[in-house]
Length: 307
Image (cartoon, rainbow, N blue to C red; front, side, top):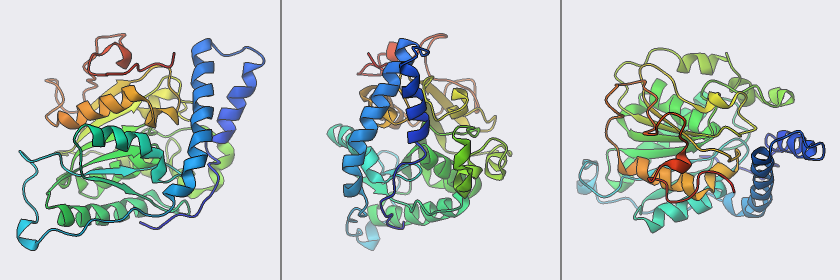
């Protein structure tokens, strides 16, 4: 995908600053204040790393033709494609990539797309081309995809509307506005932001029937994500999709990609590529008891709330 120039992370900053201002008036509970403080700290660190992520990562040499397109099942982990959010780049996944690499994932591909991209559909078509190239280069028939925020929406459009379910085994979304988000109204000047609004053409397309979709979806969402309005918009509730929604309490939008509990949950999701529960497609099945959050689940080897 197109190498992106440096641009400030304008969609993230206004709501964070507004929430930080409320601290002085003591209008937010302690857990919300901690989540906002952590998001601001992550934003500061990410701005330092951002320039290093502008350059597209080097691609490995393709395998010989006779080894191409081997089945993914029974082999080592399939390639993992990481797709960043709006006006961001691959540097947002530095810690998540490290976590995956330490636990045996050897084929990790971070893609950059331009912040000047004006259409989710076009970005999804570009993703489709990259996935085909990755499969040809690695010899796998399928990949797993991890998308943060807008990246998750692009990947879902590819899977659900462009036939990507033949290539994507598991799609993990992190803080993705599956039902659209109403936050930062002034950002509507950006056409992609308009497509992320509730009721937009893209959001309505994703609500259309998707019978037989073969991809497994796992959505990580937070009750304190200030960029998801309402917070429940980051859950997948489509009746035709095999969807698992995992609540991560007390973590903000930016911190989701660096939190050890989220990383552990993603590793578990990629290690468990089977069907989601016994209740069938469309079920909300995180494996948690009612009222539990990810911090209560032993599958997560780090706390899922900010202390």
